[in-house]
Image (cartoon, rainbow, N blue to C red; front, side, top):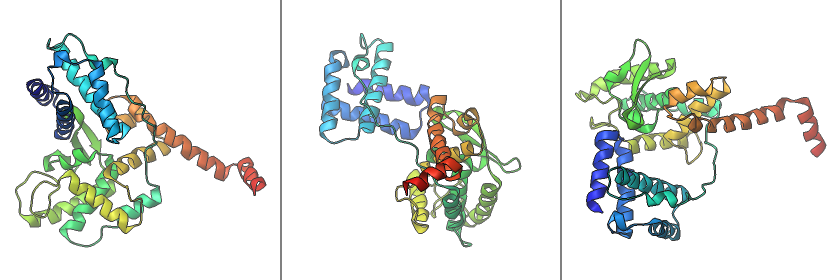
Length: 296
């Protein structure tokens, strides 16, 4: 199976142009599958795959993680079937574990402003961190998209940036005035590092900032303002989309800004908006207020 896995990963990298993060996830999933069941792919059936999933369940893996691994195996066998290595895709006969639907977590406007204002001072680090927080919220970037930005991707005059999303698909994203101001301040401080790197965001040693470092930055400032302990860069992406919807942006526009290939992925924010509307209704509608008084 090892050779088939390597061929599939080469295909993903060369022809599908998947991101390094996605490639690592596929590699990990398939190596786990191989460790459990190192057989010729032609001899693997749906019962073998179900046994693998059952072993993950016994290890107390989350259903989301199990579903991801099954999706990887499906893609792997789909590739093998298309290339003629196996007569059929056995993973198609395996049902996906039911994953409970959860609404995206997001910050209120007041919480967001508190977070944005927290990085203060005239140091390189605070200027960089403020630019990162402002850009994540202003443009709804994935953390992988943010860390892959180069200076050449910015159009400061037009307040735009070119972003390479999933599958290396490019899109042009507007940058808000506050975020652009923070970026310009950061670029002024960045000169002091005297590094020739084209990466937009650098660590103190002058190397490209990693996704893990960005997560640490977000967590650090969220704790300083007593926000949710599980706040992440993706929370700011959800906040960006939710606030746009609250202010009347249409789903198609939000889909384009987020870089979602399917509108169904973006539609989860409508559920958040309905919850928001119900809260507004309960606070503002006279009959709702009267009902609350009766309960008391």
